[in-house]
Image (cartoon, rainbow, N blue to C red; front, side, top):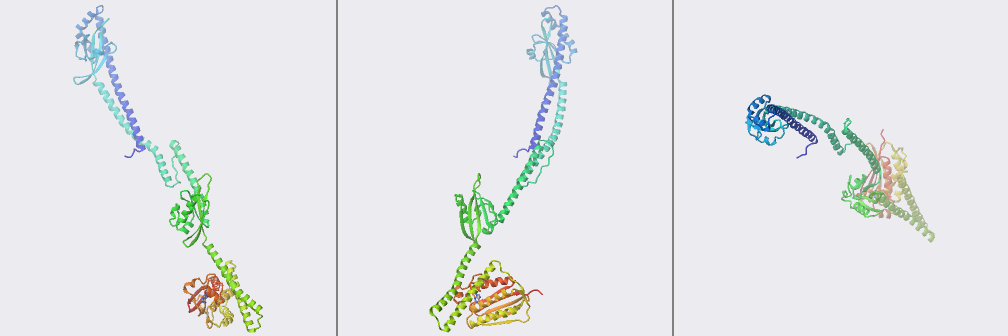
Length: 585
Ligand code: ADP
């Protein structure tokens, strides 16, 4: 059963106290009423007995006690009849031995044993013939000795009636008092309980995380003091929370602005701070403990090592295609328990760069070495052998010259690629005629093609609009593409350069060769720096570049908001199409 509410307890308590008090009052009132009535009756009995005694003493003055007693006993009937006039009670005169002499009071024989002095009557409450009566026995005394007893029997009906009325009256006032008290104490307890209820309600609101509540209680009493303290407490909690949340925000923004993932843990492995990189790297958002990283056992290993006392743990892992460098170290707080921090750094780009750099160095050194070795070989041979044969001399000088040009081209490519990397790569655009540009480029390349016995043709749709572009950069990229077409074509091959308009918005330049073609699986990579489909093939034909030609093409085309298309089949040849936007009218 639910315990009684405090309010009901208060009401019940006051009702109980009131009932007890009223009960006591009623009891005392009835008792007092009765006591008064009995006292009156006793007084009446005493004075009637005194009158009888006085009367007998007058009549028996000078007689012996025995004569006086005889007189009393013989005249009992007359004395009784005379005395009856002075008392409302029934009267009876009794001899010293207890024998009734006259009268009809029929007092109880027991009273004889209690009756000792004439000043204190013996009294007894007795029911006679169905009526409650108060009986009193008083000694009748002569001049010198007791003569007998006067017994009185008072009807108590009047006193009974009085006390009944009094009782009824008191009971009524008790009931009215009870009703009034119930109302009053209900009101009082409500006014007393209401603020306590408010306090309870507000406490539960605070428990739910609401701290903007205020208890309205303005009275200057104990509850008022309590609510004031409570309001102050809420205010304090509020300001602490505000302080905490601004600290948390500051910490959050610091964590968010970090370039690395961060995971701070306490001894139990609970997360005390983390940032959004944990979601990026491990797909775990808002982790609560280290065990939320189900599939990243390396994090748990680091945590375990730190917990065992290691001062520094570092590990590199391959995770979801990323190369992550994890560094764990303890966070020591004097006087507080040790926590741990794991920093997660994405080193994918660094590692790729390092690999590329390595590849670049070996690639460049190789590319530079090949023509240099040829040049040194020929010059050595010419100086050692004192060659006189003009044909051999001319062939040797031609090779030295060719390799020298190749070296220059390589260095140019490297410088260009370097300028792209270092952001020095700018395009200076002006209105230019692509037709003129291509004419000039094709003319330049014609001699080289002719040397390789390759035919190059150029066709253009007439009256094409000018475009906005960097003449030199565009010339360079078309040379690169035609150079590639030449490199990967066999003697007797054809290279077709065609300029047309495509979809109104673009001018299209296509460079078509019928050479080796490109493996479709590798087509997507040919625009990456230092990429060559077939390293050996590129080098062995003596024309190999550093894999930078198409990389530069892509950079320049992008700077012109253009597009590149490559259609190629192995053994069928390659068609590279560059689309450059036509400026709006
Ligand atoms: P490289 O200077 O080595 O030629 P590029 O960036 O110009 O480097 O070209 C990248 C790779 O694309 C080349 O190594 C070559 O394998 C391939 N490639 C480019 N153009 C052609 C082409 N017309 N025919 C066949 N392969 C080509």
